[in-house]
Image (cartoon, rainbow, N blue to C red):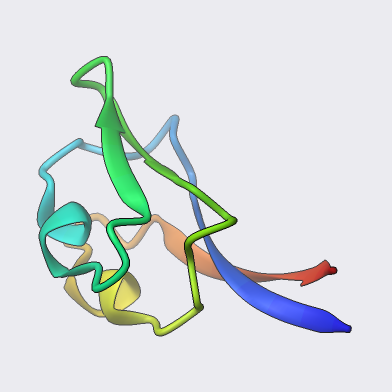
Length: 65
């Protein structure tokens, strides 16, 4: 089975926290005040984080589970 999950390009992330605020599953957290990180176990691929990211550094990836 393939599931879609959010992934952040951490080298380009500006750690603004917009994605963290809109995530309905609390799957995103800011690490070291420098970038967002997605907990793939909690992410449901709803794309809300992608819609609010001002730096456009979040994408959906396909993971086989």
